[in-house]
Image 1 (cartoon, rainbow, N blue to C red):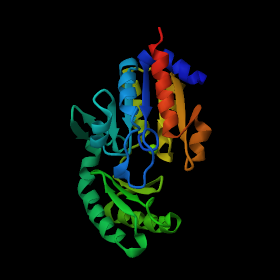
Image 2 (cartoon, protein in one colour):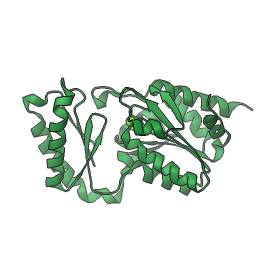
Image 3 (cartoon, protein in one colour):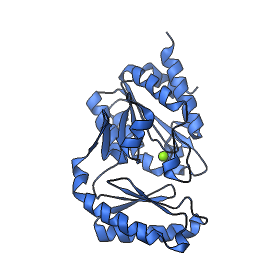
Image 4 (cartoon, rainbow, N blue to C red):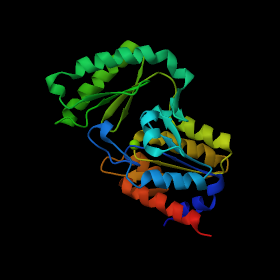
Length: 264
Ligand SMILES: [Mg+2]
């Protein structure tokens, strides 16, 4: 096992594990609603939550479903920090509340627009305070990508939202700063962590690495883990301290952390 993982294990009591969900703890699936954590994940996270100062999931997905799948011991941030699940209740960040009506209107228009024959397989995912326009399940993703991108841009312009591209998806979000960086950096500072790890597979995870850069500049020991797949952005792989193969590689690394923190 790589040295950064061993160093991280040594600092578990004052360290934080932050990670993405889709493509990191779950395999990427054509329909986002079908994703589930790999079977070992809930138990591994619970184990680690007892050893590390915090285990935190920071995902673009809604907090409610993550809380259901991953159990009570991990901290759950949904919609890139716009939601936090706590004791069975999902709290919405104040900054996004004023945009809920705009999101709902954009959703209705997106559903109507996406029902064209040429856009078969495209899906509107309603995440409450955000929308995902997915084209992974389209028979011809390369052809529909610019079309879905254009639709996202039009809806964003009309409803005062912003477009953030991801893996085979365009997200429509409220125009407020919502990145994984804010969650990771804020929680690390609130908890006084002297070590932090971020695990992710996608462009939207780069802000997680940015948070680690800031914490590292202040003396924390930081480990950036990239999950390699056919779609991994090169920027993520280039900045990583550790690269693992797919969600199975993440499960192995989490298992290694459990083992390293169990030894006397
Ligand atoms: Mg992901």
